[in-house]
Amino acid sequence: MSSGPGPEPAASPSTAPAVTWTAGAVARMLGLPPSTLRAWHRRYDLRLSTPQTGSHRRYGRADVDALLRMKHLIDQGLGAESAAARAFHAGGTDIATLLTAVRQLKIDTATALLDAHLSGHDVVRTWEQLCRPALDALDGDRCIDLVHGLSWAIAAAMHRVPTPGGASPTVLLACVDGERHTLPLEVLRAALAEHGRTALFLGGSIPDPALRDAVARTHPAAVVLWASRAAEPPRRLRVPRLVLAGPGWPRRTGRAARPATLGDALRCLEERPG
Image (cartoon, one colour):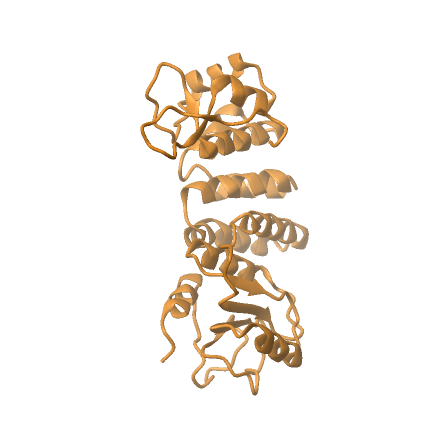
């Protein structure tokens, strides 16, 4: 969108008015005739987030993003009415629609649908109510290609949740040595970012010595380790809080926290170390 027209400040008594665009400017950004944009409003009840005070529509950043999602979904073959519902209305993306896109291997469409859901819901709700049920349904199909495609779409959508800037990482995220199932920690990173917490994700299969080196370099307040298969807690890892996530850990893990869900992990990371 950087090649489009520049933003036009809306009239406002505030000293720092919100940045908005006219309908004509937005149509040019989208590469659409203004008449198409007017028709979309007339037919699909597009609900703008920007307060409308005059006779001409003004679009804020969230509105432009929703229109871009709608256009992308239409370009990917979704009907305009369905695209509008999923791009503009909270809860518009449902599991069946997401699965349809994935089963057709339209991964870009799946990513746009997840983006649309995240625009109206937080990361935890998107994961628990949309992503996990969709992954469970595909796991029942025994379709590895579809599971990988959906996982890629989820990770791509979560990567777009911006990390708070300016602060050193307070949480270190890593998979144990031999573990390559990284998606749960990518989702946790996005959820922490949404809560204003910075996290450094080291990726999959991190040996204990490399993890200790990373802790020595970053001095995090907490370390989260993911294991989907049998694993032993790390030794000689000196951190204020250790969180062992995933089903691979033994029942007894000393003082380490053992969250059962994404929400549990967020809550234990927000608590002060005992």
